[in-house]
View 1 (cartoon, rainbow, N blue to C red):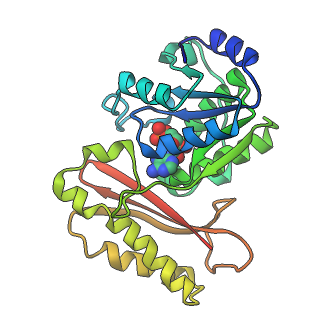
View 2 (cartoon, protein in one colour):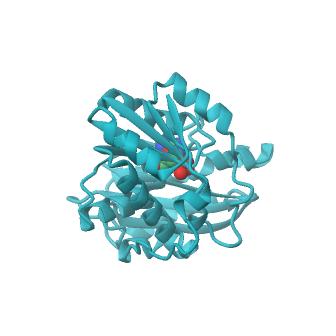
Length: 280
Ligand code: AMP
C-alpha cells in the first residue's frame, strides 16, 4: 500500500494503476460504514484507492473542522488490512493552494435539507470530489446512502460535468440498535448515545405508515415527528423531509413509481445527526 501526499504523485500512480480502479473518498476516522465501501471497491476493482482528507471548504465557520476526529495511523492500518493499493492523504494547501478560486456550485439539488442548514457545504463537497475525480480518474467511486443528499449531489455533478465515473451508492451501516455509524457519534455522551437511535426509529415509523398505504408526505413526516418529540435530549429537529431520491425536491404526495427518500436531521447535544431511508 502506498501513502501519497501530493496531487502530482497521486495522478501519476493512478494513471499507472491496474484497471478498473475503485476510489473511496473519506474524511478519515474510519468505521465499519467506511470499510463496507472499501470492501466493495476492493471486490469490484483490480486496484483500489482511498482518500483521507478532512475537507476544510465543506465546513461552515462555526462547525467542527478543527475538532473533527482524526486517527490517521489507525486508518492506514485498517486500509492496509483491507488491501488498499493507494491512499491519498494530502495536506490542505496541496488541494487548495494559495489563490485557489474555482468552485463547483451545485444547483437546486443542494438547496434544501443539508444545503439549507449548512450554507456552502455542498459547494465544498462537490469541488473536492471533482478534484479527486480529476486527480485520480477512478473508474468507480463509492459513497454511502447515509449521506443521501451528498451522493445525489455527486451523481448530478458527475452527470452534468461528464466526469465519466461510475458512482456506486452503498447501504447505510448501523449499530445493532439502528443508529447509523458516523465518525461524529464519538462526541455523544452516554445519555445522548441512548437517545440517538430515536432517529432511525422515527424513520422506521414513517416508512411503516407508508407501507400501510399512507401517501400524504405531511402525515408520513408527522409519524416521525411523534417519535422524535418524545425525546427530551433532542434539542431541535432541523428537518423531517420527504424528497424525490434523485432530485432532492420536496414532495407533498409520495408517488408510486419514483424512489422517495425520507430524511431527518436533529441536534443532540454537540452533534447533528442525519439519517434517511429510501422507500421501497
Ligand atoms: P465521511 O468520512 O463521513 O466523509 O464519509 C465517507 C464516506 O463514507 C461517505 O460516502 C459516507 O456516506 C460513507 N459513510 C459514512 N457513514 C456511513 C455508514 N454508516 N454507512 C455507509 N456509508 C457511510
